Image 1 (cartoon, helix red, strand yellow):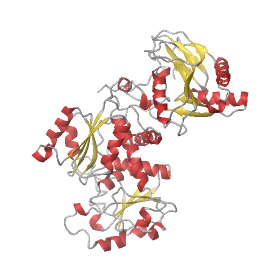
Image 2: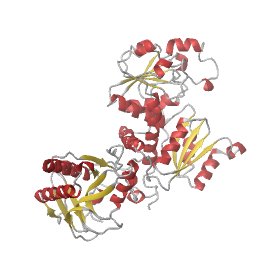
Image 3: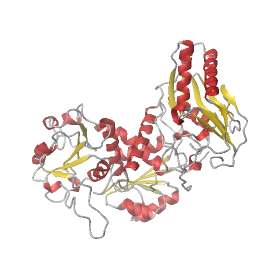
Image 4: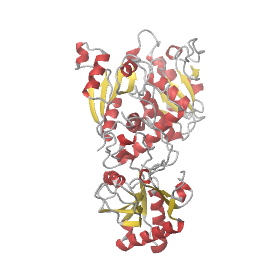
Length: 343
Length: 187
């Protein structure tokens, strides 16, 4: 990797740029949103605007990441995240290799650390990892000098989803400071919710988490542990009554009820959950007029979201998917500053 | 931008205005069906130059010429050499450039690499019937087989010299400065 230099001097006229243009993004990996400052997030969103324009071109292809190899390493099923990382890499001219847990040496018992070392030895510059265990991408980042992007780890984090949600919200609502969003449903098992809490509060949104008590996180807003490092989430409101929480909200985000991660009795019944927490047209009428509806997908229509709302005028669901490509392009581009081969 | 002590002004506001007016006339002269022309400025300083050329053509000929802006950040060939990349901005171009005459507009023509990148980016929008190049200053030292069709001023320089174009819209005033390679901004 070429050493980063922060330049404050003038540059030759041919390399002209707006004065005061930002220095390098400064993060080697994207493991979660919690370490990103507001300006880091804004840099991703602004870069994604440029990427969105690239995607509108008739030939959506640029050579910015030519010579960069992106390795998608997915230990969990995924359609949209893996496909959008793959497309993002290809639009930027990177070589993209996909590997899933099944059908690889992982099935022969290879450890995560060995797999990551092998992938690096093959020539990966970026490893995009999804893993069922929280923290797995952190382990990978410790044992590889490739850039690691967390594409979802267990119940922990899903930073690119949160960034694309922030991008979608910013396009719809403008400046997010002071705007209100309600995250609804299975907060406890949602890495999407967790990363979104970081991203959206950092951008100044007021976040309310709504769900049955059994599906709300515990230990929120707790005092920092004695170790000195504050591991609690930023300040959010918790609410069990959706009708009350949704009143006047600027945006509503439904989360997928993750039945595959539930062991034990979190819910008395699915019908009870739907009755109290499904986003319905009636409930949307309580939100601010024209409020945005988001869902990270895949949707359980008729469970956490009514079909009318999922596909209605206020739904951003399809745009979220489309924005996912632009935001992931921005992340790959910002992380690999200085990696690409010169011609 | 800070000006080095030994920087010399080689074009003042009047010279820049006259050069752009002349280029505007030349574009019209070469393209009688001026409506086919689209002026595409390279960010940052090519974009306001393209706007000024469009305004001049409209003033002289009464023809409204379309204009756009292109960010070449994703198409540069020196990304790994620069370390820090400038912030990207979305390009602003019509969805199709088929059969249009594209006049790329940039402040300084030096190695030609920015123009190569701009041509590369343009081709993502279709197949223009021609791509031409207008620059305020041609300072020589090309590294690629690229030449300008419209030149405001030919400026002989040493390779290490630094040429700075300042424009009202970006820098608060119009002037072109050249300085020797000894100062901090040189290379």
